[in-house]
Image 1 (cartoon, rainbow, N blue to C red):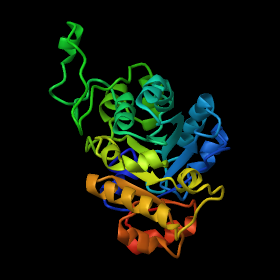
Image 2: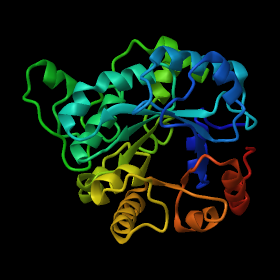
Image 3: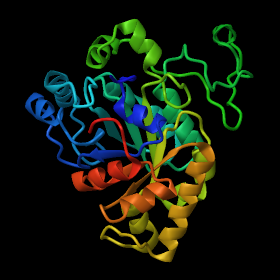
Image 4: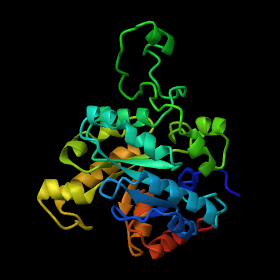
Length: 315
């Protein structure tokens, strides 16, 4: 029987690689498609709203379809769903001004959010804070003014390095999100927390490091508490760094390899799962190297990787 709501987090907690399917554009968000996708071979489904339509009503129907088509073969209520948000993490103000996107996405009952083009620690901090309820205090800098102090007019302050400010997600979407997770509203308030910052949290937050500015600051970005996975985005990085309009593939050019290794090292240093595309021929070596989120969207890759790790959870 599953021990968690979020299948992807359950597997990562066992040091098992996870495998996803889904498109960056054009994902069909209907109840019928959700029913069909409920029995996917993948551990999580990526919904691409960065370039695909920001279809929140469709997302709600899709999540309802996943519930109606479940449970998964592993016994989870649904596969995990991670949504790529449209906002780019190029600066902190941009992320904070567009935090409504995270609220809308999370309110549909998804299990994770991916922030694209993260370029600073302030951006990553704003992202995590926007996805958290303010009553959770894990990782919050204790030197910041308390809620009572703020009410009495204490001057605002920024958290110290490697710490967070208070969460900014408001109540109101729990009546729509909690039923998708199959829990009551109070339990949703408790469990909708970023993992592994909260070991009992069921929310998986990720960042794409896909610009020269992001790579230059990846160590500080990935030190922000609450980030669960990250990737070096080869498509956008290759476009900006080398002018490549085609998607670079492994083996990367030297500049791309340097960026990949730097992001990977920062992930390992901060306990963040690293995402990378694999094939059936490369997945075992990448897993042995430490890759734990596998892109590529191929069932045969997942089959090879699961066999390599002797994964006990049914696929």
